[in-house]
Length: 610
Image (cartoon, rainbow, N blue to C red):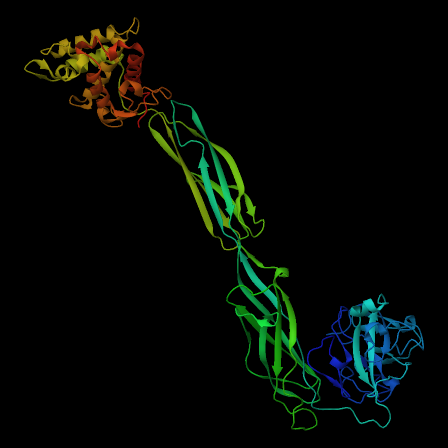
């Protein structure tokens, strides 16, 4: 039996090697085998019926489905005996070198194989091999033109009917020596070496995530606010790494003696004959092994890369060496104790990589709540893609009655392989009015407000709140010696006179400012805390002048300032009003209205904090 469809190294048949025979690997699964009938005999090699290469006569040669390991796959085949060198198309009936077709047609030599068991109903003699399996005799066939008595058995699927189908066939060489020729060699045959090479590498993706929102702050009186978010995910360019080639160097010993000290002498990956500088190869075990007679041993190896392969198309070549005494007690090993290179092609572009983090699951969470899945994003190639996916959605938040609430919204991705995460956040603030605790001018006119004023402190009979009010120009028409009762009466009358009619708005502006001033004085100011101040002293609260009442911009009345404390707003009036407020903002009613709305917004708690 010759090696199963592999040509690396030399295996001699009466001085003619498989390389001489031109054998190559073929597409048909399994291998071709010759054997003998256990009753008839005729195998000159002895053995178990699988390893016979030399026969006493042409009629001693049979074929079978082969052993369970390495035999023919299930299917329909025909056999032909051809002369050495005629394998390429010689199996076709009538072709040059076909030694069988002068005796019968290929249909007479057709058989089937099922689970390695041969079935045949043609005219050729049937027999049983030493394994107890059915076999069919190859004879009749013509004598070989080869001087060494070498023949080639061709086993082909029935579809193989031209030289173009050579790759579908399997071949096995056997020898029937002519009468008087020397016996077949029994020792000193080179080992047969073949190898596999399986390339592998890792391809890893990384990802980025971004999040934005159409606005970040809403100031509103009551209701709810809607925010529109956008999340985008970027696919970064893939990174390849961890290139390696693994495989098995198979050493077949066709001799009748063990081969000892067998090891991989060299294992090199090259492109165009130049070794790849980024790779080194090593056998899984560097300890030499013994390959038993008529047996094979697999020797695993691994080639690791420190950088990308030098070329897309590479070749992995291995040479095996040995130190053995071969067949019949001979002390001289055959040849140079090394095999011809066993090669296997590697094409990196055809290699399916191990994918790492090739997709991400994107989720979104509001205020650290349970995440909601937005979707899964999968890689679309090795190039960067930005964005690889975009998600748009809205969240609605209630507006608080007072002050501000900030909502954090975080989008997160998690990769499918390593669990790597990334996140992006956007915060929005929803504000109700400042919770100043300020009270309206109507309060300071009614008995409760009047009672707070009249009950205030005095210095030598002069009401402290009146003195404090007089620091502002519009209220300097209040007597400098006013008692608290007189001060309360002054407040009552100013509020009563409030109106916005006419060419100016002095009266209404004066009443609203007066209420704000009293709010500051009695709301954590010099007059103590006579009214509630949830956000602290009213005078120190900063007012957002561009959003009074949730929509009005009154900054023009305060020099273009957009944020001022309540106390600063009161002090500003000294720069725009005369004593008593008769000429105020040059009596420009529109500007007076802006100032009035600011104090009104504070007093009615519809002004927003900065």
